[in-house]
Length: 638
Image 1: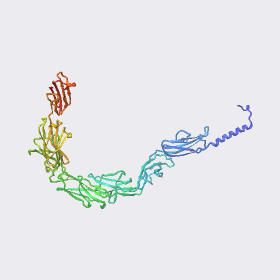
Image 2 (image 1 turned 135 degrees about the horizontal axis):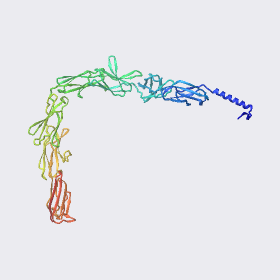
Image 3 (image 1 turned 180 degrees about the vertical axis):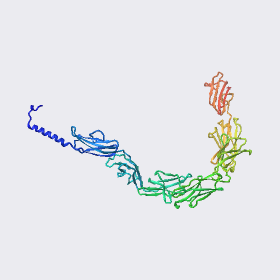
Image 4 (image 1 turned 120 degrees about the vertical axis):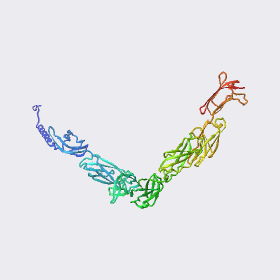
Protein backbone atom coordinates (compact mmCIF):
# COMPACT_ATOMS: atom_id res chain seq x y z
CA UNK A 1 0.00 0.00 0.00
CA UNK A 2 1.35 3.35 -0.77
CA UNK A 3 0.33 6.63 0.82
CA UNK A 4 0.11 8.26 -2.40
CA UNK A 5 -2.74 6.01 -3.30
CA UNK A 6 -4.84 7.29 -0.41
CA UNK A 7 -5.76 10.54 1.11
CA UNK A 8 -5.37 10.81 4.90
CA UNK A 9 -6.70 13.55 7.05
CA UNK A 10 -4.75 15.33 9.79
CA UNK A 11 -6.91 13.70 12.40
CA UNK A 12 -5.78 10.25 11.28
CA UNK A 13 -2.10 11.08 11.70
CA UNK A 14 -2.77 12.53 15.10
CA UNK A 15 -4.48 9.32 16.22
CA UNK A 16 -1.53 7.21 15.12
CA UNK A 17 0.99 9.38 16.94
CA UNK A 18 -1.02 9.41 20.15
CA UNK A 19 -1.51 5.60 20.09
CA UNK A 20 2.19 4.95 19.60
CA UNK A 21 3.15 7.22 22.44
CA UNK A 22 0.60 5.58 24.72
CA UNK A 23 1.93 2.08 23.97
CA UNK A 24 5.50 3.14 24.73
CA UNK A 25 4.34 4.76 27.96
CA UNK A 26 2.42 1.66 29.03
CA UNK A 27 5.47 -0.59 28.50
CA UNK A 28 7.55 1.72 30.62
CA UNK A 29 4.88 2.01 33.30
CA UNK A 30 4.32 -1.81 33.79
CA UNK A 31 7.93 -2.95 33.77
CA UNK A 32 7.68 -3.67 37.59
CA UNK A 33 10.39 -4.66 40.11
CA UNK A 34 10.34 -8.44 40.97
CA UNK A 35 8.85 -9.18 44.41
CA UNK A 36 7.40 -12.30 46.10
CA UNK A 37 6.61 -13.80 49.54
CA UNK A 38 6.94 -17.48 50.65
CA UNK A 39 4.43 -19.25 52.87
CA UNK A 40 6.80 -21.78 54.61
CA UNK A 41 10.55 -21.40 54.74
CA UNK A 42 11.24 -24.29 57.13
CA UNK A 43 9.83 -27.75 57.53
CA UNK A 44 10.35 -31.45 57.14
CA UNK A 45 10.63 -33.29 53.85
CA UNK A 46 8.51 -33.38 51.84
CA UNK A 47 7.87 -29.63 52.31
CA UNK A 48 5.30 -27.85 50.16
CA UNK A 49 5.78 -24.08 49.76
CA UNK A 50 3.57 -21.49 48.14
CA UNK A 51 4.80 -18.16 46.80
CA UNK A 52 2.76 -15.00 46.48
CA UNK A 53 3.67 -12.36 43.87
CA UNK A 54 3.99 -8.81 45.14
CA UNK A 55 5.52 -7.24 42.03
CA UNK A 56 2.26 -6.09 40.53
CA UNK A 57 3.19 -7.56 37.16
CA UNK A 58 0.81 -9.41 34.91
CA UNK A 59 0.61 -12.97 36.38
CA UNK A 60 1.04 -14.39 32.90
CA UNK A 61 4.45 -12.72 32.73
CA UNK A 62 5.69 -14.00 36.17
CA UNK A 63 7.75 -17.21 36.42
CA UNK A 64 9.59 -19.03 39.24
CA UNK A 65 12.52 -21.35 39.69
CA UNK A 66 12.46 -23.50 42.88
CA UNK A 67 16.01 -24.56 43.68
CA UNK A 68 17.64 -25.90 40.50
CA UNK A 69 14.42 -27.01 38.86
CA UNK A 70 13.13 -25.72 35.54
CA UNK A 71 11.32 -22.36 35.37
CA UNK A 72 7.58 -22.76 35.98
CA UNK A 73 4.56 -20.54 36.22
CA UNK A 74 2.97 -22.52 39.11
CA UNK A 75 3.31 -20.90 42.53
CA UNK A 76 3.24 -24.15 44.56
CA UNK A 77 6.17 -26.55 44.79
CA UNK A 78 7.13 -29.52 46.99
CA UNK A 79 10.72 -30.13 48.02
CA UNK A 80 11.10 -33.90 48.39
CA UNK A 81 14.61 -34.03 49.86
CA UNK A 82 16.19 -32.40 52.87
CA UNK A 83 18.48 -29.47 52.09
CA UNK A 84 18.74 -25.69 51.68
CA UNK A 85 17.13 -24.19 48.60
CA UNK A 86 16.81 -20.82 46.79
CA UNK A 87 13.80 -19.42 44.95
CA UNK A 88 14.02 -17.08 41.93
CA UNK A 89 11.25 -14.89 40.41
CA UNK A 90 11.46 -13.89 36.74
CA UNK A 91 9.24 -11.25 35.03
CA UNK A 92 9.02 -11.28 31.24
CA UNK A 93 8.61 -7.75 29.80
CA UNK A 94 8.54 -8.82 26.17
CA UNK A 95 11.19 -9.42 23.53
CA UNK A 96 14.50 -10.11 25.17
CA UNK A 97 13.75 -7.89 28.09
CA UNK A 98 12.85 -8.92 31.64
CA UNK A 99 13.87 -8.74 35.26
CA UNK A 100 14.42 -11.26 38.08
CA UNK A 101 15.21 -11.63 41.76
CA UNK A 102 16.81 -14.63 43.62
CA UNK A 103 16.39 -15.18 47.31
CA UNK A 104 19.34 -17.32 48.29
CA UNK A 105 18.95 -20.23 50.73
CA UNK A 106 15.52 -19.07 51.77
CA UNK A 107 14.12 -22.62 52.16
CA UNK A 108 15.39 -25.10 54.77
CA UNK A 109 14.09 -28.66 54.46
CA UNK A 110 14.97 -31.14 57.25
CA UNK A 111 14.82 -34.90 57.50
CA UNK A 112 11.69 -35.83 59.45
CA UNK A 113 12.39 -37.30 62.92
CA UNK A 114 9.93 -38.84 65.34
CA UNK A 115 10.07 -36.97 68.60
CA UNK A 116 11.66 -38.84 71.51
CA UNK A 117 9.55 -38.14 74.57
CA UNK A 118 8.24 -39.93 77.63
CA UNK A 119 5.07 -39.54 79.64
CA UNK A 120 5.36 -39.75 83.38
CA UNK A 121 2.12 -40.27 85.22
CA UNK A 122 1.67 -38.68 88.59
CA UNK A 123 -1.02 -38.86 91.23
CA UNK A 124 -4.36 -37.04 91.02
CA UNK A 125 -4.61 -37.45 87.22
CA UNK A 126 -1.53 -35.34 86.56
CA UNK A 127 1.07 -36.15 83.92
CA UNK A 128 4.46 -34.85 82.90
CA UNK A 129 5.58 -34.92 79.25
CA UNK A 130 9.39 -34.86 79.01
CA UNK A 131 11.13 -34.04 75.72
CA UNK A 132 14.37 -36.00 75.41
CA UNK A 133 16.01 -34.35 72.38
CA UNK A 134 16.96 -31.01 70.76
CA UNK A 135 16.41 -31.72 67.07
CA UNK A 136 13.60 -29.17 66.60
CA UNK A 137 13.35 -25.54 67.63
CA UNK A 138 10.26 -26.27 69.75
CA UNK A 139 7.70 -29.01 70.42
CA UNK A 140 3.94 -28.91 70.34
CA UNK A 141 2.14 -31.21 72.80
CA UNK A 142 -1.50 -32.13 72.20
CA UNK A 143 -2.79 -33.66 75.45
CA UNK A 144 -5.80 -35.29 73.77
CA UNK A 145 -8.43 -33.28 75.67
CA UNK A 146 -8.46 -30.16 73.47
CA UNK A 147 -5.55 -28.74 75.42
CA UNK A 148 -2.04 -28.18 74.06
CA UNK A 149 1.29 -26.66 74.96
CA UNK A 150 4.50 -25.63 73.19
CA UNK A 151 7.85 -26.11 74.94
CA UNK A 152 11.54 -26.09 74.07
CA UNK A 153 13.96 -28.93 73.61
CA UNK A 154 14.73 -31.14 76.62
CA UNK A 155 11.99 -29.42 78.58
CA UNK A 156 8.84 -30.84 80.15
CA UNK A 157 5.25 -29.78 80.51
CA UNK A 158 2.73 -30.89 83.14
CA UNK A 159 -0.98 -31.30 82.65
CA UNK A 160 -3.92 -32.38 84.81
CA UNK A 161 -6.86 -34.31 83.38
CA UNK A 162 -10.40 -34.21 84.65
CA UNK A 163 -11.08 -37.95 84.37
CA UNK A 164 -9.20 -41.26 84.52
CA UNK A 165 -10.16 -42.40 81.02
CA UNK A 166 -7.75 -43.12 78.19
CA UNK A 167 -6.10 -40.18 76.37
CA UNK A 168 -3.73 -40.01 73.39
CA UNK A 169 -0.84 -37.57 73.73
CA UNK A 170 0.68 -36.39 70.44
CA UNK A 171 3.98 -34.50 70.17
CA UNK A 172 5.18 -32.85 66.94
CA UNK A 173 8.47 -31.03 66.37
CA UNK A 174 8.38 -27.44 65.08
CA UNK A 175 10.88 -25.22 63.31
CA UNK A 176 10.69 -21.48 63.89
CA UNK A 177 8.75 -19.90 61.08
CA UNK A 178 8.17 -23.31 59.57
CA UNK A 179 5.27 -25.56 58.69
CA UNK A 180 3.70 -28.07 61.10
CA UNK A 181 4.39 -30.97 58.79
CA UNK A 182 6.96 -33.03 60.70
CA UNK A 183 6.09 -36.61 61.71
CA UNK A 184 4.18 -36.69 65.01
CA UNK A 185 4.63 -39.29 67.76
CA UNK A 186 1.75 -40.45 69.92
CA UNK A 187 1.37 -42.35 73.17
CA UNK A 188 -1.80 -43.47 74.87
CA UNK A 189 -2.07 -43.17 78.63
CA UNK A 190 -4.65 -43.47 81.34
CA UNK A 191 -4.24 -41.01 84.21
CA UNK A 192 -4.07 -42.44 87.72
CA UNK A 193 -5.85 -41.31 90.83
CA UNK A 194 -4.61 -41.09 94.38
CA UNK A 195 -1.15 -42.09 95.61
CA UNK A 196 -1.82 -45.56 97.13
CA UNK A 197 0.96 -47.60 98.78
CA UNK A 198 1.69 -51.09 97.38
CA UNK A 199 0.77 -54.27 99.29
CA UNK A 200 3.31 -57.04 99.84
CA UNK A 201 1.80 -60.51 100.30
CA UNK A 202 4.83 -62.84 100.38
CA UNK A 203 8.59 -62.61 100.75
CA UNK A 204 10.56 -65.85 100.41
CA UNK A 205 14.31 -66.26 100.59
CA UNK A 206 15.99 -69.22 98.85
CA UNK A 207 19.08 -71.26 99.58
CA UNK A 208 20.98 -69.82 96.59
CA UNK A 209 20.91 -66.30 98.01
CA UNK A 210 18.00 -65.04 95.92
CA UNK A 211 14.62 -63.92 97.21
CA UNK A 212 11.22 -63.46 95.64
CA UNK A 213 8.74 -60.82 96.73
CA UNK A 214 5.07 -61.02 95.68
CA UNK A 215 3.07 -57.82 95.71
CA UNK A 216 0.16 -55.83 94.34
CA UNK A 217 0.92 -52.38 92.92
CA UNK A 218 -2.16 -50.26 93.57
CA UNK A 219 -1.41 -47.64 90.92
CA UNK A 220 0.50 -47.41 87.65
CA UNK A 221 2.96 -44.91 89.05
CA UNK A 222 6.70 -45.71 89.22
CA UNK A 223 7.59 -48.17 92.01
CA UNK A 224 10.98 -49.05 93.47
CA UNK A 225 12.27 -51.83 95.72
CA UNK A 226 14.36 -50.33 98.50
CA UNK A 227 16.65 -51.62 101.26
CA UNK A 228 17.18 -50.03 104.64
CA UNK A 229 20.65 -48.58 105.31
CA UNK A 230 22.09 -46.69 108.29
CA UNK A 231 21.21 -43.44 106.54
CA UNK A 232 17.75 -44.33 105.27
CA UNK A 233 16.51 -46.36 102.31
CA UNK A 234 18.34 -46.93 99.04
CA UNK A 235 16.90 -48.11 95.74
CA UNK A 236 17.55 -51.74 94.79
CA UNK A 237 15.57 -51.83 91.55
CA UNK A 238 12.66 -50.24 89.77
CA UNK A 239 9.56 -52.41 89.29
CA UNK A 240 7.43 -52.83 86.19
CA UNK A 241 3.98 -51.39 86.80
CA UNK A 242 2.35 -54.56 85.42
CA UNK A 243 4.48 -56.90 87.54
CA UNK A 244 3.29 -58.89 90.56
CA UNK A 245 6.62 -60.29 91.72
CA UNK A 246 10.33 -59.54 91.66
CA UNK A 247 13.42 -61.67 92.29
CA UNK A 248 16.29 -60.18 94.28
CA UNK A 249 19.47 -61.77 92.99
CA UNK A 250 21.75 -61.10 95.96
CA UNK A 251 19.69 -60.74 99.09
CA UNK A 252 21.38 -59.04 102.05
CA UNK A 253 21.52 -61.16 105.19
CA UNK A 254 19.24 -59.69 107.88
CA UNK A 255 18.23 -57.06 105.35
CA UNK A 256 15.01 -55.04 105.70
CA UNK A 257 13.16 -54.06 102.53
CA UNK A 258 10.14 -52.11 101.36
CA UNK A 259 8.43 -51.09 98.11
CA UNK A 260 7.75 -47.39 97.50
CA UNK A 261 5.64 -45.57 94.94
CA UNK A 262 6.83 -42.16 93.77
CA UNK A 263 4.88 -39.13 92.55
CA UNK A 264 7.52 -37.37 90.43
CA UNK A 265 5.38 -34.31 89.90
CA UNK A 266 5.09 -33.51 93.62
CA UNK A 267 8.10 -35.54 94.82
CA UNK A 268 5.84 -37.36 97.29
CA UNK A 269 6.06 -41.10 98.09
CA UNK A 270 4.06 -43.89 99.78
CA UNK A 271 5.60 -47.15 101.00
CA UNK A 272 4.54 -50.70 101.80
CA UNK A 273 5.07 -52.28 105.19
CA UNK A 274 8.61 -53.48 105.87
CA UNK A 275 9.69 -57.06 105.19
CA UNK A 276 12.89 -58.67 106.35
CA UNK A 277 15.19 -61.61 105.59
CA UNK A 278 14.24 -64.52 107.84
CA UNK A 279 16.54 -67.52 108.37
CA UNK A 280 16.86 -70.68 110.47
CA UNK A 281 19.93 -72.41 111.94
CA UNK A 282 20.13 -76.15 112.67
CA UNK A 283 22.23 -78.09 115.16
CA UNK A 284 22.15 -81.89 115.10
CA UNK A 285 22.05 -83.52 118.53
CA UNK A 286 21.65 -87.16 119.64
CA UNK A 287 18.17 -88.17 118.52
CA UNK A 288 16.95 -84.59 117.98
CA UNK A 289 17.60 -81.43 116.01
CA UNK A 290 17.79 -77.97 117.57
CA UNK A 291 16.09 -75.36 115.35
CA UNK A 292 16.54 -71.59 115.87
CA UNK A 293 15.54 -68.51 113.87
CA UNK A 294 15.94 -64.76 113.90
CA UNK A 295 13.03 -62.88 115.47
CA UNK A 296 10.84 -60.52 113.47
CA UNK A 297 12.70 -57.24 113.03
CA UNK A 298 11.86 -53.85 111.60
CA UNK A 299 8.11 -54.52 111.80
CA UNK A 300 5.31 -53.49 114.11
CA UNK A 301 4.95 -56.16 116.82
CA UNK A 302 1.22 -55.53 116.95
CA UNK A 303 0.96 -56.77 113.37
CA UNK A 304 2.62 -60.10 114.22
CA UNK A 305 0.38 -63.19 114.06
CA UNK A 306 2.54 -66.29 114.45
CA UNK A 307 5.63 -68.32 113.58
CA UNK A 308 5.08 -71.65 111.79
CA UNK A 309 7.96 -74.10 111.45
CA UNK A 310 7.79 -76.62 108.60
CA UNK A 311 9.77 -79.82 108.21
CA UNK A 312 9.76 -81.39 104.74
CA UNK A 313 6.66 -79.37 103.90
CA UNK A 314 4.70 -80.36 107.04
CA UNK A 315 4.10 -78.02 109.95
CA UNK A 316 5.63 -79.27 113.22
CA UNK A 317 5.56 -76.18 115.45
CA UNK A 318 3.80 -72.83 115.69
CA UNK A 319 3.53 -70.06 118.23
CA UNK A 320 1.90 -66.66 118.60
CA UNK A 321 4.71 -65.39 120.84
CA UNK A 322 6.98 -63.07 118.85
CA UNK A 323 9.82 -63.49 121.37
CA UNK A 324 10.11 -67.28 120.89
CA UNK A 325 12.83 -68.22 118.42
CA UNK A 326 13.81 -71.84 119.18
CA UNK A 327 12.41 -75.38 119.34
CA UNK A 328 13.69 -78.98 119.38
CA UNK A 329 12.58 -81.63 116.90
CA UNK A 330 12.81 -85.14 118.34
CA UNK A 331 10.80 -86.66 115.51
CA UNK A 332 13.87 -87.71 113.50
CA UNK A 333 15.53 -90.87 112.18
CA UNK A 334 19.19 -91.70 111.66
CA UNK A 335 20.82 -90.78 108.35
CA UNK A 336 17.70 -89.07 107.14
CA UNK A 337 18.03 -85.55 105.77
CA UNK A 338 15.39 -83.14 107.05
CA UNK A 339 14.71 -79.69 105.68
CA UNK A 340 13.20 -76.84 107.72
CA UNK A 341 11.54 -73.55 106.80
CA UNK A 342 10.05 -70.83 108.97
CA UNK A 343 6.93 -68.95 107.94
CA UNK A 344 6.13 -65.70 109.75
CA UNK A 345 2.64 -64.29 109.27
CA UNK A 346 1.31 -60.78 109.87
CA UNK A 347 -2.23 -59.45 110.18
CA UNK A 348 -1.93 -57.61 106.85
CA UNK A 349 -1.63 -60.98 105.11
CA UNK A 350 2.13 -60.70 104.61
CA UNK A 351 4.03 -63.99 104.92
CA UNK A 352 7.80 -64.07 105.24
CA UNK A 353 9.42 -67.41 104.35
CA UNK A 354 12.94 -68.34 105.34
CA UNK A 355 15.23 -70.32 103.03
CA UNK A 356 15.07 -74.10 103.31
CA UNK A 357 17.84 -75.37 105.57
CA UNK A 358 18.64 -79.11 105.67
CA UNK A 359 20.55 -81.40 108.04
CA UNK A 360 21.36 -85.11 108.24
CA UNK A 361 19.93 -86.64 111.41
CA UNK A 362 21.18 -89.55 113.53
CA UNK A 363 19.13 -92.10 115.49
CA UNK A 364 19.20 -95.61 116.98
CA UNK A 365 15.43 -96.02 117.19
CA UNK A 366 13.95 -99.21 115.72
CA UNK A 367 11.67 -98.29 112.80
CA UNK A 368 7.99 -99.14 113.30
CA UNK A 369 6.20 -101.68 111.14
CA UNK A 370 4.57 -101.08 107.80
CA UNK A 371 0.81 -100.57 107.78
CA UNK A 372 -2.22 -100.92 105.50
CA UNK A 373 -0.98 -104.33 104.40
CA UNK A 374 -3.10 -105.83 101.62
CA UNK A 375 -3.12 -109.33 100.13
CA UNK A 376 -5.30 -110.77 97.38
CA UNK A 377 -5.21 -113.51 94.78
CA UNK A 378 -5.18 -112.47 91.13
CA UNK A 379 -7.60 -114.22 88.72
CA UNK A 380 -4.64 -116.17 87.31
CA UNK A 381 -3.48 -117.54 90.66
CA UNK A 382 -0.75 -115.18 91.96
CA UNK A 383 -0.86 -113.32 95.27
CA UNK A 384 -0.62 -109.53 95.11
CA UNK A 385 0.77 -107.75 98.16
CA UNK A 386 0.96 -104.05 98.89
CA UNK A 387 1.63 -101.96 101.98
CA UNK A 388 2.48 -98.46 103.20
CA UNK A 389 5.72 -97.34 104.79
CA UNK A 390 5.61 -95.07 107.85
CA UNK A 391 6.26 -91.36 107.33
CA UNK A 392 7.37 -88.54 109.59
CA UNK A 393 9.34 -89.78 112.57
CA UNK A 394 9.25 -93.32 111.26
CA UNK A 395 11.34 -92.26 108.29
CA UNK A 396 10.85 -92.64 104.55
CA UNK A 397 14.36 -93.69 103.48
CA UNK A 398 13.95 -97.41 102.73
CA UNK A 399 16.97 -99.45 101.63
CA UNK A 400 15.32 -102.86 101.35
CA UNK A 401 12.24 -104.90 102.19
CA UNK A 402 11.79 -108.52 103.28
CA UNK A 403 8.58 -110.51 102.75
CA UNK A 404 8.20 -113.67 104.81
CA UNK A 405 5.81 -116.35 103.50
CA UNK A 406 4.65 -119.15 105.79
CA UNK A 407 2.78 -122.19 104.46
CA UNK A 408 0.31 -124.56 106.15
CA UNK A 409 3.16 -126.63 107.57
CA UNK A 410 4.89 -123.66 109.18
CA UNK A 411 7.71 -123.57 106.66
CA UNK A 412 8.94 -120.10 105.72
CA UNK A 413 10.67 -118.57 102.74
CA UNK A 414 11.87 -114.96 102.47
CA UNK A 415 11.61 -112.69 99.42
CA UNK A 416 13.99 -109.70 99.37
CA UNK A 417 13.31 -106.42 97.54
CA UNK A 418 16.33 -104.13 97.28
CA UNK A 419 14.28 -100.99 96.88
CA UNK A 420 11.52 -98.95 98.46
CA UNK A 421 8.81 -100.56 96.35
CA UNK A 422 5.58 -101.13 98.25
CA UNK A 423 4.12 -103.86 96.03
CA UNK A 424 5.04 -107.48 95.40
CA UNK A 425 3.52 -110.42 93.52
CA UNK A 426 4.10 -113.98 94.70
CA UNK A 427 4.05 -116.22 91.63
CA UNK A 428 5.29 -119.42 93.28
CA UNK A 429 1.90 -120.64 94.48
CA UNK A 430 1.32 -124.33 95.29
CA UNK A 431 -2.31 -124.94 96.22
CA UNK A 432 -1.24 -128.06 98.14
CA UNK A 433 0.56 -125.85 100.66
CA UNK A 434 -2.05 -123.19 101.17
CA UNK A 435 -3.00 -121.21 103.06
CA UNK A 436 -0.02 -118.89 102.68
CA UNK A 437 0.49 -116.13 105.22
CA UNK A 438 2.74 -113.07 104.76
CA UNK A 439 4.66 -110.68 107.02
CA UNK A 440 6.65 -107.61 105.86
CA UNK A 441 9.63 -105.78 107.36
CA UNK A 442 12.13 -103.25 105.97
CA UNK A 443 15.52 -101.64 106.60
CA UNK A 444 16.06 -97.91 106.80
CA UNK A 445 19.09 -95.77 106.03
CA UNK A 446 20.69 -96.69 109.38
CA UNK A 447 20.55 -100.40 108.47
CA UNK A 448 18.00 -100.84 111.24
CA UNK A 449 15.32 -103.46 110.62
CA UNK A 450 11.76 -102.50 111.40
CA UNK A 451 9.29 -104.40 113.47
CA UNK A 452 7.65 -107.07 111.27
CA UNK A 453 4.03 -106.63 110.40
CA UNK A 454 1.46 -109.13 111.60
CA UNK A 455 0.93 -112.12 109.33
CA UNK A 456 -1.97 -111.83 106.92
CA UNK A 457 -3.47 -114.75 105.03
CA UNK A 458 -5.59 -114.32 101.89
CA UNK A 459 -8.83 -116.27 101.40
CA UNK A 460 -8.41 -119.86 100.15
CA UNK A 461 -11.24 -121.43 98.12
CA UNK A 462 -11.54 -125.21 97.53
CA UNK A 463 -13.97 -127.36 95.52
CA UNK A 464 -15.22 -130.93 95.85
CA UNK A 465 -17.17 -132.87 93.22
CA UNK A 466 -16.81 -134.12 89.65
CA UNK A 467 -17.44 -131.95 86.60
CA UNK A 468 -17.58 -134.98 84.29
CA UNK A 469 -21.06 -135.97 85.42
CA UNK A 470 -24.20 -134.78 83.72
CA UNK A 471 -25.89 -134.40 87.07
CA UNK A 472 -24.70 -133.81 90.56
CA UNK A 473 -23.48 -131.09 92.92
CA UNK A 474 -20.20 -129.23 93.34
CA UNK A 475 -19.29 -128.16 96.88
CA UNK A 476 -17.16 -125.11 97.73
CA UNK A 477 -15.64 -124.11 101.07
CA UNK A 478 -13.24 -121.31 101.96
CA UNK A 479 -11.17 -119.84 104.75
CA UNK A 480 -11.63 -116.38 106.21
CA UNK A 481 -9.07 -113.67 105.53
CA UNK A 482 -6.64 -113.60 108.48
CA UNK A 483 -4.70 -110.72 109.98
CA UNK A 484 -7.08 -107.87 109.17
CA UNK A 485 -10.76 -107.32 109.76
CA UNK A 486 -12.91 -108.19 106.74
CA UNK A 487 -16.63 -108.29 106.04
CA UNK A 488 -19.24 -108.66 103.30
CA UNK A 489 -18.11 -111.98 101.86
CA UNK A 490 -19.56 -112.69 98.41
CA UNK A 491 -19.16 -115.76 96.18
CA UNK A 492 -18.86 -114.78 92.49
CA UNK A 493 -19.36 -116.87 89.38
CA UNK A 494 -18.43 -115.56 85.94
CA UNK A 495 -18.04 -117.11 82.48
CA UNK A 496 -14.75 -115.31 81.69
CA UNK A 497 -11.88 -113.78 83.64
CA UNK A 498 -12.30 -110.04 83.87
CA UNK A 499 -16.02 -110.05 83.13
CA UNK A 500 -18.71 -109.07 85.58
CA UNK A 501 -20.14 -112.05 87.50
CA UNK A 502 -23.43 -113.52 86.32
CA UNK A 503 -24.07 -115.09 89.71
CA UNK A 504 -23.30 -113.62 93.15
CA UNK A 505 -24.24 -115.02 96.54
CA UNK A 506 -23.69 -113.37 99.91
CA UNK A 507 -21.95 -115.87 102.18
CA UNK A 508 -20.37 -115.93 105.61
CA UNK A 509 -16.65 -115.46 106.29
CA UNK A 510 -16.23 -119.24 106.27
CA UNK A 511 -18.55 -122.08 105.28
CA UNK A 512 -19.65 -123.91 102.17
CA UNK A 513 -21.70 -123.39 99.04
CA UNK A 514 -23.07 -125.81 96.43
CA UNK A 515 -23.64 -125.54 92.70
CA UNK A 516 -26.14 -127.82 90.92
CA UNK A 517 -24.44 -129.10 87.75
CA UNK A 518 -27.69 -129.64 85.87
CA UNK A 519 -28.72 -126.00 86.33
CA UNK A 520 -25.52 -124.56 84.85
CA UNK A 521 -25.76 -122.78 81.49
CA UNK A 522 -22.08 -122.08 80.90
CA UNK A 523 -19.76 -124.97 80.13
CA UNK A 524 -16.80 -123.03 81.60
CA UNK A 525 -17.11 -120.77 84.58
CA UNK A 526 -14.90 -119.27 87.27
CA UNK A 527 -15.68 -119.13 90.96
CA UNK A 528 -14.01 -117.03 93.66
CA UNK A 529 -14.84 -115.33 96.95
CA UNK A 530 -14.38 -111.66 97.63
CA UNK A 531 -14.49 -109.61 100.84
CA UNK A 532 -14.08 -106.00 101.92
CA UNK A 533 -10.65 -105.26 103.41
CA UNK A 534 -10.77 -101.71 104.70
CA UNK A 535 -11.30 -99.52 101.64
CA UNK A 536 -10.14 -102.31 99.31
CA UNK A 537 -11.51 -105.63 98.09
CA UNK A 538 -9.57 -108.85 98.55
CA UNK A 539 -10.15 -112.03 96.50
CA UNK A 540 -9.59 -115.70 97.01
CA UNK A 541 -7.93 -117.91 94.46
CA UNK A 542 -10.09 -118.53 91.37
CA UNK A 543 -11.31 -122.04 90.53
CA UNK A 544 -12.03 -122.82 86.92
CA UNK A 545 -14.89 -125.27 86.27
CA UNK A 546 -15.09 -127.11 82.94
CA UNK A 547 -18.33 -129.10 82.67
CA UNK A 548 -18.65 -132.06 80.31
CA UNK A 549 -20.90 -131.47 77.30
CA UNK A 550 -23.07 -134.29 75.89
CA UNK A 551 -25.52 -135.18 73.13
CA UNK A 552 -27.87 -138.15 73.88
CA UNK A 553 -30.61 -139.65 71.66
CA UNK A 554 -32.69 -142.89 71.51
CA UNK A 555 -32.44 -145.53 68.74
CA UNK A 556 -36.21 -145.77 68.16
CA UNK A 557 -39.49 -143.93 68.69
CA UNK A 558 -43.24 -144.73 68.34
CA UNK A 559 -45.29 -141.84 66.95
CA UNK A 560 -48.67 -143.50 67.65
CA UNK A 561 -50.33 -140.76 69.68
CA UNK A 562 -50.11 -142.44 73.07
CA UNK A 563 -47.94 -139.61 74.40
CA UNK A 564 -45.14 -142.07 75.08
CA UNK A 565 -42.05 -141.69 72.92
CA UNK A 566 -44.17 -140.02 70.20
CA UNK A 567 -41.32 -137.89 68.75
CA UNK A 568 -37.62 -138.17 68.10
CA UNK A 569 -35.09 -135.68 69.48
CA UNK A 570 -31.92 -135.27 71.52
CA UNK A 571 -30.93 -134.41 75.05
CA UNK A 572 -27.87 -132.17 75.15
CA UNK A 573 -25.98 -129.68 77.34
CA UNK A 574 -23.55 -126.88 76.58
CA UNK A 575 -24.10 -127.15 72.80
CA UNK A 576 -23.81 -123.89 70.86
CA UNK A 577 -24.10 -125.21 67.25
CA UNK A 578 -26.38 -128.05 66.15
CA UNK A 579 -27.51 -129.67 62.88
CA UNK A 580 -29.67 -132.86 62.71
CA UNK A 581 -30.82 -134.66 59.51
CA UNK A 582 -32.91 -137.84 59.13
CA UNK A 583 -32.92 -139.75 55.80
CA UNK A 584 -35.23 -142.53 54.56
CA UNK A 585 -33.87 -145.64 52.87
CA UNK A 586 -33.88 -143.89 49.47
CA UNK A 587 -31.61 -141.15 50.83
CA UNK A 588 -34.31 -138.50 50.98
CA UNK A 589 -34.07 -136.04 53.88
CA UNK A 590 -37.35 -136.40 55.71
CA UNK A 591 -36.45 -134.04 58.57
CA UNK A 592 -33.84 -131.36 59.39
CA UNK A 593 -33.38 -128.86 62.21
CA UNK A 594 -30.74 -126.58 63.68
CA UNK A 595 -32.72 -126.15 66.88
CA UNK A 596 -31.59 -128.60 69.50
CA UNK A 597 -35.03 -128.50 71.12
CA UNK A 598 -37.00 -129.29 67.94
CA UNK A 599 -38.16 -132.94 67.59
CA UNK A 600 -39.39 -135.05 64.61
CA UNK A 601 -42.99 -136.18 64.96
CA UNK A 602 -42.71 -138.92 62.29
CA UNK A 603 -44.47 -136.98 59.54
CA UNK A 604 -43.22 -136.48 56.01
CA UNK A 605 -44.84 -134.53 53.18
CA UNK A 606 -48.09 -133.93 55.04
CA UNK A 607 -48.43 -137.57 55.85
CA UNK A 608 -47.10 -140.24 58.14
CA UNK A 609 -43.67 -141.59 57.39
CA UNK A 610 -43.74 -145.37 57.11
CA UNK A 611 -42.32 -147.56 59.83
CA UNK A 612 -38.80 -148.79 59.28
CA UNK A 613 -35.18 -147.82 59.65
CA UNK A 614 -33.92 -144.32 59.03
CA UNK A 615 -30.44 -142.83 58.94
CA UNK A 616 -29.67 -140.17 61.56
CA UNK A 617 -26.83 -137.64 61.11
CA UNK A 618 -25.94 -135.12 63.82
CA UNK A 619 -23.16 -132.49 63.75
CA UNK A 620 -22.82 -130.44 66.96
CA UNK A 621 -20.21 -128.15 68.60
CA UNK A 622 -20.08 -127.38 72.31
CA UNK A 623 -19.18 -124.05 73.98
CA UNK A 624 -15.50 -125.00 74.20
CA UNK A 625 -15.30 -125.86 70.49
CA UNK A 626 -15.48 -129.67 70.75
CA UNK A 627 -17.28 -131.18 67.75
CA UNK A 628 -19.67 -134.15 67.83
CA UNK A 629 -20.51 -136.10 64.64
CA UNK A 630 -23.02 -138.98 64.79
CA UNK A 631 -24.26 -141.23 61.96
CA UNK A 632 -26.66 -143.85 63.33
CA UNK A 633 -29.65 -145.98 62.33
CA UNK A 634 -32.88 -145.35 64.17
CA UNK A 635 -36.24 -147.11 63.95
CA UNK A 636 -39.67 -145.62 63.48
CA UNK A 637 -42.18 -148.08 64.98
CA UNK A 638 -45.91 -147.79 64.42
